[in-house]
Image (cartoon, one colour):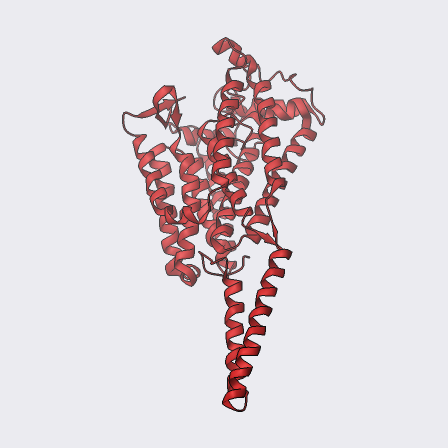
Length: 436
């Protein structure tokens, strides 16, 4: 999929090859000329012409090459963030007024987080992305350390889930979000470090081992299954794009799909109740009407919102399901409010914007100056694609409730900052692209 090469590529390598070529030409003149005098004259004359020719070619190459920056990606990021603020206010104003006596409560916090995120994005975009490779391993293990802190007195529980770390000033940090970007940078670096070995089973075992460490860390330390699935999927996708064979991966997906279908059928007809909240979610997803007042309540209210919106919606701000019918409507169910107010048409526009963002990330990955940049952009692509897909699947009833938010639109603190930091890295990679 990507051009093969050394991970930390020397950007002057083309000029160096031309210089080597000119030396070889001079050596060839010495071997083929007649007298020593004629050899010396030929070497001096043709050598000078070769050097002048190489210098001229370099100048022409620089003139033809154009600096690149993906302004299309930047614009879609800004639009999604602004649209997210509008929909966040629309979906949360009522509950914020009831719970906090301030209808702008969630909007103000999200706007401040967005400003911080854009500052982070700008700073990160100016950093040479190769620097992340030098500290990728430290970032990876630091993310594990942060998740371990969740189990200490510094940990914070929100809505029954212990996934945050308390920070000064009443702030909090969700370490699992940081792990996503740490895994992208580290697995990409390890693939470059392994070289050709990454395409063989020994290298794949190493990469999967690190991926499993991160996955188990997220699941066991923060009890966050959906993020754990995303982390492991990112690892597998990065391995897939550098592996020359696709059949083993296709076979693995097919086997996993068959096992999943068999498991769902088994649960549907054998299990009616469970004390485990994840199993209850699956049972509620399989039999929503039987659990309409309990575990299926949020899911069904979301479907009612989508259905009542029709194709063009009720109009911005006119949702009725957000009036405490959908719990925490500004979080993972915000797409249902979008469908109710803007209709299926509005949802399609948003999905087209996400598709365009993914297209720009894919463009950056395919045109990155080296393998490391290509893999980082691919990892960011995978993260956004997975999160959008999972959120849509949950809201439309294709998947059981996972708690995965809609990127750039749902309410969030750490998640928004990390997403914008990832976009900053992608923009930084795009700035290294040279178009001819």
